[in-house]
Length: 146
Ligand SMILES: [Zn+2]
Ligand SMILES: [Zn+2]
Image (cartoon, rainbow, N blue to C red; front, side, top):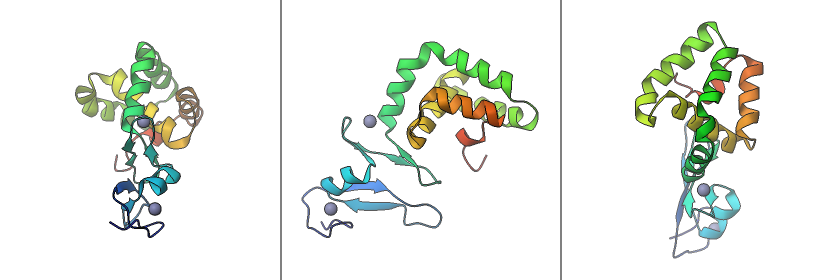
């Protein structure tokens, strides 16, 4: 199979997410180009998942952060919901009501979104939390259809 980046014929092809808007949404890359693209997690040996804004994250790395910070999940939820209000709070609340049962509770759903956003934007979970608090909106962690 031919790598869409370097054009070389490769025994292994990795499907990585790419681009946004009308697509294409994935690219078939050789392992070398996949690693170079930054959209392949070397420690977990999986391609990242892609988001509609063009950012990506390794879902296993997201799970690792959630496991590591789970004891603080209630604290993150409290800090964020205490610092946003009105429509922004309602929007976050509605989303947590919907995804909470899937993630095993509202705190865990929020932490998972914070963890994914931190990997997507290259900052820590605490920095994402601070950004949400200073914007007084959780829009950056909510799906764009929300
Ligand atoms: Zn290649
Ligand atoms: Zn990973």
